[in-house]
Length: 519
Length: 83
Image 1 (spheres, rainbow over the protein chains, first blue to last red):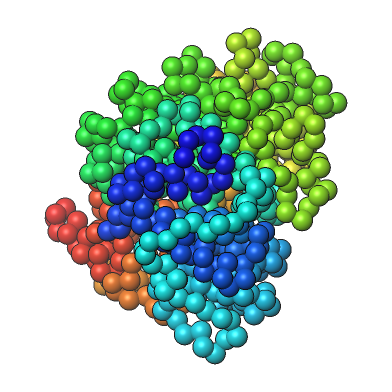
Image 2: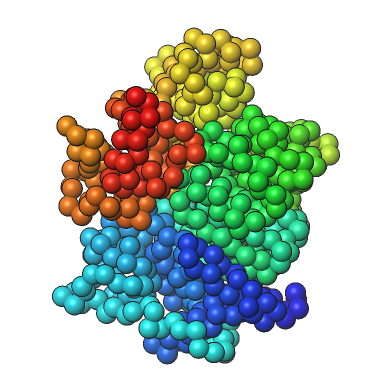
């Protein structure tokens, strides 16, 4: 299949299966699966789904941690023309119920690890056609739910992809993202969205079939998913390690599997640099050729530390995007990392980025406005929420709610979230600036700055800090800060913690941080 | 309280909301979804304070930390080495 014929997401798998049938595509613990075998299994799943009445557009929920079954399910669902809806694997019943009600899925595919959770959630009200379980351990006979054994459906007997009339604009996946408001929204992505974004990412990362990617990020978020799709498109290999909680094991596996790429969100790198033997063993990662970072703003200090630690042969890609953009909108080319260290770079191939004012007019270089992205990767909209969709999608493209300016060379710089800016004693403050300054003091591993309502100041700033050493005191930190930022930006209170509350995405949970202050 | 009891009590209280059922000595915290990566740091913090040991970065591996049995063996070794 030539590049132009790859129009649907599962073509990535099918194409690589035809070119590299016996190549190991996927490694996880003892599992080493080839492209051909995986493709056959996905075909068999797709055939079963179609035989059992699944129609185009039907939603199929996936509830897995990263594993082979996830990948087979994902591509199998897509081959059947249905819509893959990966759920966050850390959700509890109270959060699962409203999502199930919202998505109206026909089928859930899951593994034994989530059986207890699903029972506690209560699936009866959701009119499921089937609950497909991999290696089930519990007894479902007393419930009215029709359960099916996953392993009996997928087998690796030779099979063709089902003949199915799927259009590139058809809905392929719905991904729930909570953003800053807390209420999950279902982002609708088409085959075209994901295919366009995947091809673009492969291009700027220069991915080839020789690339081996270590994956510690969950597939159920777009960043993790982009690692999967891009490496399958390139014919490379994915190494999944779900034990990043024990980073020494991840480093060991990166050495053993001769990994060429690693990706993380800011907290991944904070953890990697400060609580793992990464620095000590970097000399053994001889095949590592790139590290990429997305999933939020990473402090300048961390980028510098990473660049100093890694050999010059390892490229560092800082990237920016959104679920609504399928994953990626911009990247900073490695050669400019140091001199454009605060920049999110320029638009990825095929995407146009603009900065607009409140009236939707483009602003001049140097002026701050809202970042808007346009391209084939921009979502179709939010599931069952036309009003919300039209509040972020218009002729200019997708309104990111990120404030941004562009320098004279065309590099973009984020200033903060539209909704994060806060008034403190008459000044408009961007908490991210203070977070960066805190990390710049070299006394801090990670931090979150929140605004607490205050009668006198409107908001007062409180910094929740994970200090580097035992000897860091509030005075020491404020003193160091005062050399970096003006007095009116200094936090009125510093709270030292051992670890910041995080969401499953790895992003800092600012709502929980605010709760810490209120304790 | 013995080392094992202390550890079990800590895990049950902080990660299982008091429900000890299903937590065996060999239950893998990671496999069962009992503790995630932030949780591991909480455990390490507790160990360092409670048992006056220092956990090195290279020691953050499942063999040392991923079950009550592993934790007990690891802490015992650390205390003996320090003595």
